[in-house]
Length: 210
Image (tube, rainbow, N blue to C red; front, side, top):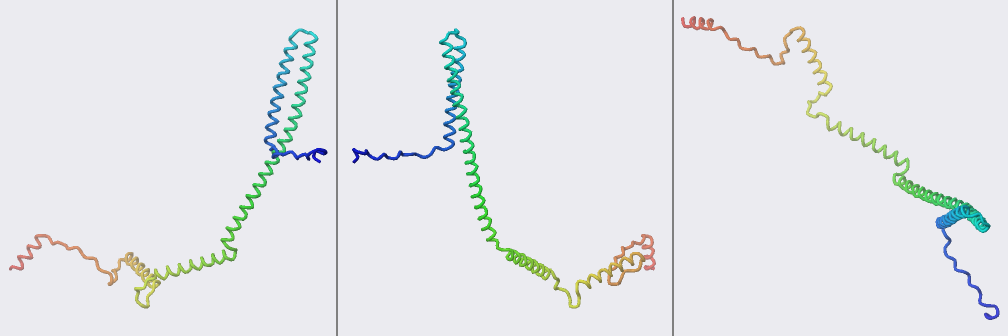
């Protein structure tokens, strides 16, 4: 059977499809080669134009001009193809950036959601703020209780002491203005000792001896 119909043809092994970047690079190489050929044609045309005006030189110049036009047409076509390839590569890169951005936003959303889940809901936050307010009130009460004076006789308070001290200050101001003696409960200022003159002291001593 194999001799009559031959062996079945095996499908050609195909490798991975070339990337857009590789395709654009290969197109650049081809365009560079065509530019070199076009430059060679220009050089040949200048040489043929400077030679004798024979029929052979003219034919060579025409053939060179045809090759130049052909190379220029191929280059223009390849450049148009490269534009499409670069446009598609740009769109592909933009799509990859969009996919990466969306994935990053999804990850950020999940992380943010987990953080706020750890914090709790609004009711938990309000309950925490109420507890903090109650704690501050307790701290203020404790500080007030600790700072209260306890070594004061019964029947006296801070307000009565303040009133008595204010009355005493007013009394002392009035005495300073009118010259009235100080109250008896205030200590009297010591009077400085006055020394008697020497003759008077001696006369008193003689009178006592006589």
